[in-house]
Image (tube, rainbow, N blue to C red; front, side, top):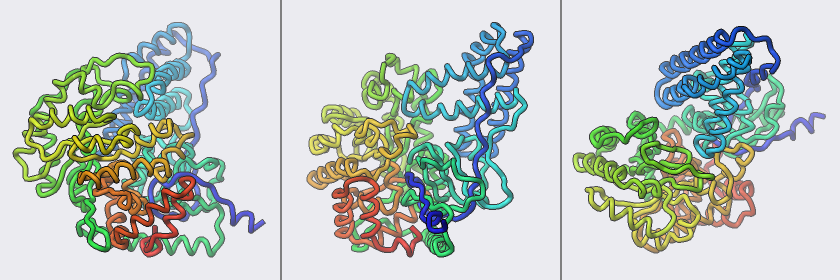
Length: 566
């Protein structure tokens, strides 16, 4: 019996590296579905109660967001907007008018809203989980049942859940949460992003995790994606030793500001992915040499018209000011599909993820792109930073040529493309004849290569960036970059995995852009391997039959993992 318990392991996708050892605490379950035949009062009273509950939820989300600040505040404010959506209120009033009780009216109104988001795919489909959280909080208030949320067992714990809602995660205490394990989600989910930001290990897409009992001791390996259940004493000691080594390494990394390079001096720029200007100072403090991906959608979402050139210029200038001597790569607006914007006038599409998005959308609204490029150019002209611009979702060389011609009218150093479509990876040589650089977005590239929605929890294995087929596409672009003398960067979540970073450099990446909390690990491990060793590890990954085998082969061949607690 002891042996069977010792060998009990669950497997998922490693989403944030590190080792956690501790007891499980399960997230509180979903609120029960309200009955369809419950007693209802006067329609106006039922509608009023439902809308009051939603407003209370929205106010609570606003308060949590204000207390949390940063990205968390943006996410929670977006949830609060869901609770206050006028079309939702109208539907609730209609249902109440037919005699449906308040709680049931909320449930049914949200069901229709959720279907629309799920059908949109991509980013909006991912927000369906946020919608469930808003619904459950409102229904819990109306039914008088416990609110869903994070447990507080009174001691540090490994949080286990089907999935995590932003409203819960923003209140988590770093000194209490040892790690995360979720059954749903992938490397780009809210859970994964939060775990990396907090610097705690996380495994997502872990089937069977919610079957664990509260208090069960587990070892969570956020690099390999393994969860060891009921470990014996020797396994606990080994895990604790690795965790201690990682803590030491992170302390060392916090003060290490060397430029990114291999052991033999091959330079690799270590850059940060940013979602807005407010993240720039923290990225610079974490040792980022510049910005490899500045997302600009924050300026455009939830607006009836594009932002002015001056508003955009000020936002870009704030980022450039944080990296006066570095490189900042600005991605032009990535709209359409999962980020529809009314002012672009895009048509309704049966499959938005495969429709008019990214550069295709901007080609239909060239004045929007022109305004953005003008603002970037003005900010660049007033800064010492080296400013590059890149277009999202480029598929063919003609698109790359068109974008470079538009960008050439502004004082930017280079104009390049995002490689997120398999066709672009396959045509990388031709594309890099016209584009001045390429940056590979591994998240979308995996989604399109495997025909697997990046937000679909049941398909998380296809989002594993260790998939050899995905690495083959990366290698194709790396080879094209080497042949043309053009820089090739990685700005997907894959770049933040320190072991995978070795492979990406071996495949030809000249820069790696990631969450700022990942920079230290990548810098330290890269400095322990020569370029030739990275190339050897890359070949091991390419030769593997699947993601698990690729990860295992490279981890076996890499050096310094135990020393760094990785």
